[in-house]
Image 1 (cartoon, helix red, strand yellow):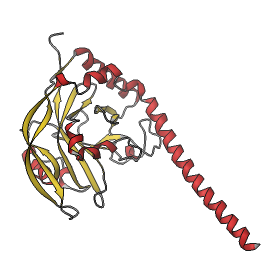
Image 2 (tube, one colour; image 1 turned 45 degrees about the vertical axis):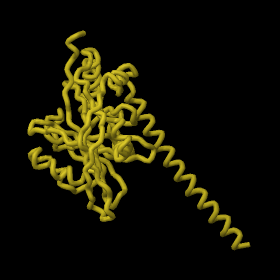
Image 3 (cartoon, helix red, strand yellow; image 1 turned 120 degrees about the vertical axis):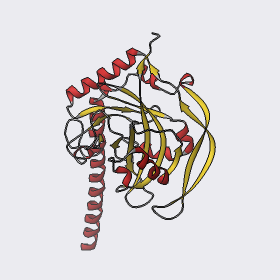
Image 4 (spheres, helix red, strand yellow; image 1 turned 135 degrees about the vertical axis):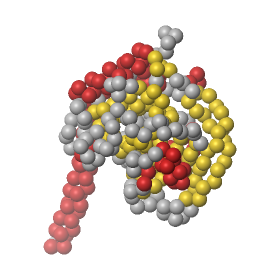
Length: 289
């Protein structure tokens, strides 16, 4: 009888633990949904998303050299091979003045509501459509929402050492790789060449400017790699990025170029990070309107 009671108590305890875990998961998911719903007024509208999308008119094909890397079995090392392939690249250099002004107004309203919000990042046909926060360190917004409340998924955040208007040569954005596909989970999908080719650019905008973000590198490295040191010349920094890239397009870069790194956790080895890098191109209003 005593053994039967013990088995019943054990089953009941296990059930309680499972239900508790499910409750916590549900609670986190609900909290994230509420936080996302609060941000809806600041997201690009459906019409604006169409203007920012990958239309045939906004794209062209050209031959370019792409550097890819295959894992060699050594955790931090890669064997690199260079191949010629046809890559779809962005040629769109203007947006309508209305779209630009709408995006800047939305960023301004966002900042008025959430003072630590410095802008917005949007990548068409992905789940990446979030405000960009910047705190006094790189820890707070990894576990807090835009309103400062505790939130497991955190926020997309700009490294606190970077200038808030993306005026640095290297501007590092951090975001979690969430199992539900949110935040920067889609960054890891760029390691697939076909996915990378079908998502050639994203958008970053602030209250002052709207930028197209032209991607040219997908790298896998560890969290303490030297590419996270933004206090270097572009010409000194690029060789290391090439070395760790799985995909790399040879683009002409100058010391005046501003780059954005989207960094998230990945699981190739302990403390692995996937880093998607692009160059900012400031948009001008269409003079033919």
